[in-house]
Length: 180
Image (cartoon, rainbow, N blue to C red):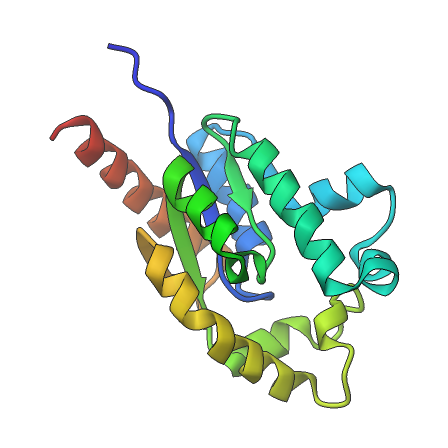
């Protein structure tokens, strides 16, 4: 019996490693990798900060949901979502219904260390980006936990270590779903 190859969706805060780890895991599993934010930028022809500037967060979230809906129709991909994708109930539903959801978890201190020099993060363009990260984590953590099939800590771990462990967990999860 030819079973549909489930997609893998990576969720977590900005800086948790979704894109970096996602690329490595996709390579390990022989799957295509897609970064949701990059896909939105490609479709719009501008960077995300420009979308935020012109349309605000609400306009960006609408584009994000449409792009996620489109990409969820593809099978067997590894998709790194944007950190705020889970704030929309429709997006959580799309993720849970169409694949295996992996929450990459990191502390606010670690997230700040990883994102402090990145100018392509409009939600951190504040006087106190660390406080903003803390606030966003408080708003989003329950959503990440709610939809996660797998939770992986990324604090203080190398990309290769996390990717290897995650690929193993994904393989185990797929074996279990094939053998009820």
